[in-house]
Length: 323
Image 1 (tube, rainbow, N blue to C red):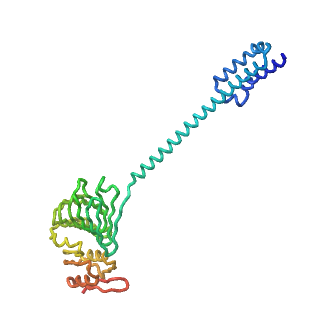
Image 2 (cartoon, helix red, strand yellow):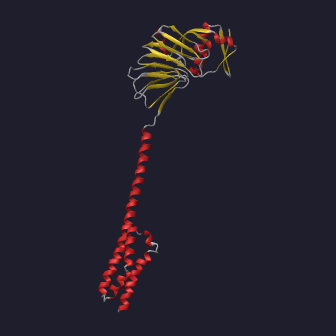
């Protein structure tokens, strides 16, 4: 009986001793290990106690308590791991949520553009978000951002158009290829093709300011400003605004316009290709009215009546020669 009791004690004592070397011991916290070590160091005292007559029920209680202690240590360790895993998961989810919110904010703040363009010989009416109206002529285009009317009232323009701008706190700006026009509320005409040789601005109502790379020019109603891209010269002269109000109906009044500039406009209106027989013909001047609603031949006859030039057609387009 005594040997049996001693064997049981040695078995339980070995549980503590083996923990020091086993892989499982590596998972036990330092405080727990120290407690085990103290118990192990008291093995001699425990051995004496073990020599006493212990019944099976007593050994079962000791065994249950040791197993409970061991189970509690492992359970507490697993619980700590579970808490750590939950914490890491929450951090990860927070990071993902942050990325999604950032991406959503970027998408929300993304600036988009609306572009309107006309084809050869076409005129289109455009109503902007601030209720300003623009009639764009042939082969023309305008573009404005989603911030229009909120942070700015800016449009990017190429071609020819009549502007009827509503008054607002934000100034209205027309950005051209190499210049810009700032207005508050007014009506004016602009001809500014990126392939053309000049910009022309005619003010019908209100006030505007024309900006080029170097200077600014204030304009009053009844003034026409011409900005020559080739020479860099900018000139202003008085005009009769009544003639130019008919522009939206297709009537284009030209005063002392170079034939080269007129032919360029007709290429946009009709999609035809013109060729000058000689360069001096380009400097001929034309004064009169061209009606864009009429045919090409009709308007060529008008030009022939007022200039010493003739037009004839071949498979390559229209040739301009001296009369």
